[in-house]
Image (cartoon, rainbow, N blue to C red; front, side):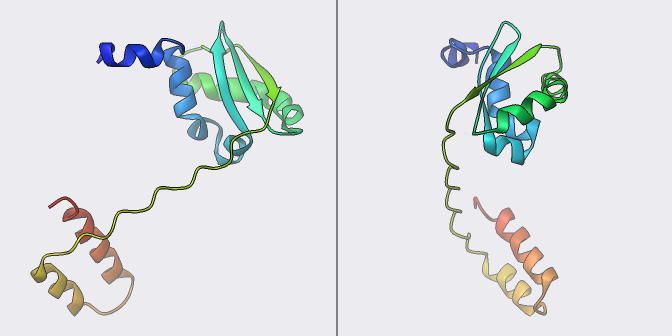
Length: 133
C-alpha cells in the first residue's frame, strides 16, 4: 500500500490529502460550495473562496480550525489563509446503474404486495441484494 500511495502523497501531506477528500464533511455543504482547500503547509491551510466569502470566513476561522483539527484527530492547522479565486462548478453526479433484474420468485412476491412505501422499500432492498448476482 505505501508503494501505491507514495506518488499521491509526494506533493501533499497525508493530512492535507485527507482534508481535501473530506472537505464537504468537515465544513458542511454550504461552505464546501464556496470554498476549497488548496494546500496545507507548516500549519497554514490555504483556502480558495468565491467572492466576498473571505470576510465571513475570517470571522469563522477559529471555529473552522477547531472543526478541521477535530476531523484530523490532531492539531495540524494553526491558521487559515484565504485566496479569492473562482471555484470549479459542481461536478455532475454519475448516472445510476440500471436496475438489476430480480429473480422471478422474488419479483412475483413483491408484485403481490399492495402499492405503497413498504413495497417500494422491499423492492429497493431486493435490488440491492441481487445487484451483483
